[in-house]
Image (cartoon, rainbow, N blue to C red; front, side, top):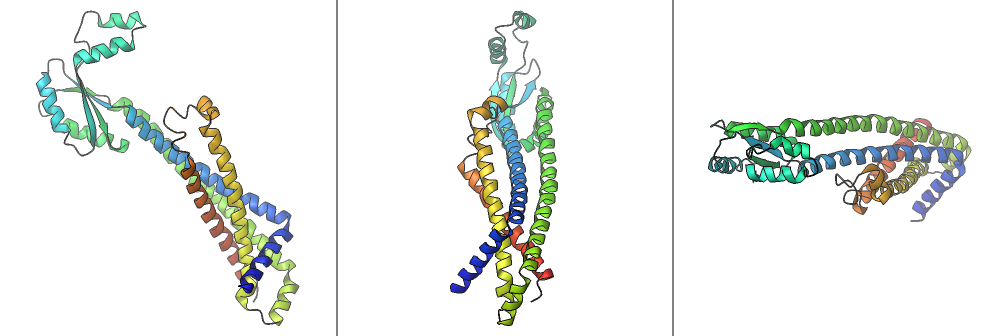
Length: 305
């Protein structure tokens, strides 16, 4: 136990002794981990937005004008058996007309468009799917079930444009996440690597004395490795503090007022305490691994024991 405490005490003394180098190493580590957190959060936010849009937007299947209601209801029962379908709502021509009038009650021009035509809007089925990425497949299956040719059209194209745009953003965020986070992690590795190398150089006489009195190789190596781990832990702590501030801004009235994040359900529900703690666990794990690995590589290359 005394040996372990001595190793940790030596590591902490080295961290404090390096001063400016310790600050630069910790700051760079914080930037790398914060960038990683930002892009993970963006990925989750975009995915949550896609799911929220899917919850609000139905894939409407419109039917030809003179299709009997009984045929539409029979068709509804057929496509309800499709595994990807979550729910189906039947909207008659009368219900569609009433909804149109209610939505456009303030615009006489839009009301004049329908005139006296009670069959102006077609009957439809509003279909929800379990996964937004299954919309195309589901609509294809719906069309295959239409053996009687009763479908007029679907709203797939309009909804698909929105979802495809979000998917492209998600892919771009993912690629940028991997690229930029990798760059910053490599920078953090190099800075910690060189910090430990300088520490080894400044303590070379002390290391020689330790070797002369019989210190083992790993007893000499461990303080440097733990020192690198301290850089990672410190960077993770500062990154977590920045993360908490960022999440607070997002979930506060400031975030919902200026970014409308509550509209898509990206707010209190997503950036909650458990999500923040999950991010801290990721930051801490990355920080420890990067700090320990870079320190180990530095001692392996520059510490001759």
